[in-house]
Structure formats: structure tokens, C-alpha cells
Image (cartoon, rainbow, N blue to C red; front, side, top):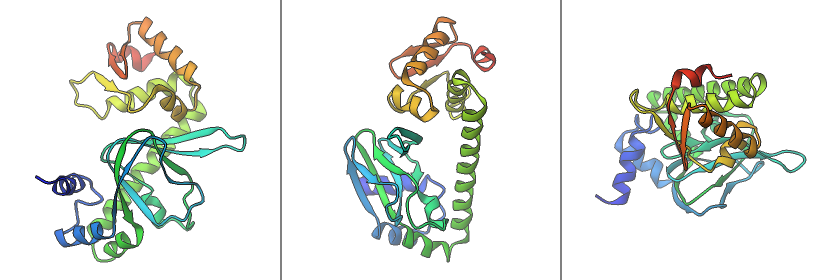
Length: 227
């Protein structure tokens, strides 16, 4: 099976593309680009004209903004089979509101906003899929605002671990950090040293076990109740 056939199957597994007919998917792909990035490669910068959205085949991309004092604030880490920047199609602003950069070797598709919008006009299922995706993103952002505003650093880390576990089968007790610990710390709005201290404390308490990027949850109930 050729790589493009595999990519088609991967795209079909995502709800932004699943409703497309074969001809519509071909039309969308004809207006797309398959990109291979290295660590540090930039896809777009805050303020660039927003003409495309992206789907990650493999690898990882960080979405971030720079604060006035030059500090990097990471909003989201995008991994395999995830999309990003699709909300820009429906926003009043014509420019990206954040920057995107590969954090390691990454392969992804760049899709034309104009081409996708043409398909939205003739495919009602596609419209509802996009709205559903944006609602999920909205709830994620609201939860992050609550976490950053109301919870201390330990609660942010615990909530992050629990959110990662929620995506796993019920009998699975291991999660894997998608990127380096300092990037996860940046996403949670805490210093890398603080993140490491919290992990050590949870490990010393016998609640988790750390092996590289893999974290095994030894006692989920205590993790949920940890103060």
C-alpha cells in the first residue's frame, strides 16, 4: 500500500474529513501540500496571513505566542492525527493569532482554507463536523483557563495527567508525555523545575512511577485526591 493511500485512510479517521466523498477528498488534496519538517521549522508566525489549516500525520507541533518581555507561552501541543488552525476559517481576523513550530521531525498536510470552505457549502455533514471540532476546542480552552486561574501548579500537573489518562482504554495505566518535560511545563504555565519537583513528589508518595517520558499511574484515586 503506497504512502498516499495510507494517508487517505488516516485522514478518513478524522471527523473533519470523514464526511467527504472520494471526489471531494481528491479535490481537497489537490489544493494541499505534504510537508516534512525538522525540529525548529516554523509553519507560520503570529500575524501571518491565515490561508491554511494543518493535519499532523506524525510528529509534534507547538502553538505559542511571545509575551512582551520575549517569553514563550505555549497554548497547545499538537500530535499525531490532530488538526490545528482550522478555526481561522471562521474568524473575522485574516491573520494567525499565534505561531506554530515543529518540536521534532514532523510530517503534516497543509490544507487550503478556501478549498475546504468551498466543500462546506455543499456538504452539510462537513459543516457539523467542523462545528463539533470547534466546540471541543472551546471547552479545552475554558478548562485550561480554569486550571491556570484557579488551581496551583500541582493541580495543573495532576489535571494534565488525568486528561491524558482519559484518552486511554480503561485498563491502561501508562501515559507518555508527547514532548519534552520543559514543553509540557510551558503548556501548563509553570517552570520546568517546578514540574520536575511535582513529579518527584508524586513518585516519592508512590502515586506514579516515571521512566523517561512514560508515567505509570500507580494509584489513580490518590492522584485525583492529592493536595
